[in-house]
Image (cartoon, rainbow, N blue to C red; front, top):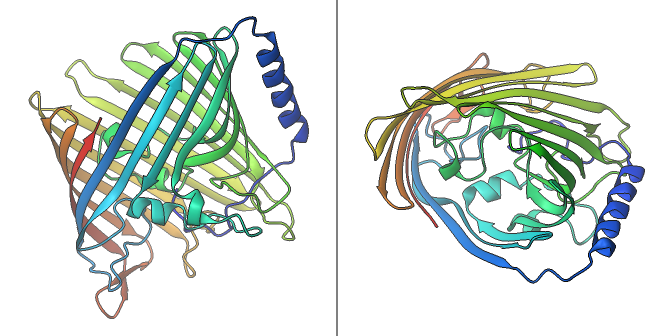
Length: 370
């Protein structure tokens, strides 16, 4: 998630009972094991995403506003590089992955500082550090730092239909720290329940916790619909309590023509403040190695609940178009032209930093994953 937030990323609703129940369930599952599970699968994987981006507003400091990916103007750089190890057993699973890149610097900059051992200096390098235990058939409990359950777009560009992240993706969490239950009653249905430190933060800076849930239903082999929510207080200690209530409805699928598509509607409230976001995107294969991509989007936060501009609220529309080339196994060359127009002049331009309403960026990326 982007770091431009009116309130610091903090934790939410107090739920010590929920955490206690999760701990009891985990302990019971471990004690119930009758034999040591010695069947172990270990997988090493990694990803590196290099890029060059040219922002036509030419920000003087080279920093592109209201985005995390790609965040640097007129320079070749590494957007995201990570290396991970996944260990899987019948009743236990774990993943540890370390990361670096300009998107990491941007996205973790608002990590809360509370005491001497919190903040982004170390936390930003941990993409995931999570351990899970199987409680019952098709029921898992996992705890640690892990990918966010909110939204359809992933942290790694290779997992997304289009290279850059939409506004709804940049302004919802990319990562969380907490505990989650995952239940798959059938191959077509998956439900999740989360208790976390808050809206994208590893360290706490209040005495509360947040809760959230997600439901994914595969209606057919070519259509999946999803719902997710988040509830919690996003005020730091000493600033009172105001509940953030956030919901989203999502769908994705594939048309008979091979077109991949996805759409998402977000809506949130925090006290008297309201915001919403819309996005629709598509990816059309042209050959076995080449595909065209496109996106339209809108994000409206007039009360600055999520995006603090310092002047006017953030209300903007955007459109993107791109081309992807699969050069070799795991090697992708992706290029995209993106434009965003805001109702207020929020984007600094040129050496003088004169605010503009419209920005455009051309980005090209070469990535490799294994």
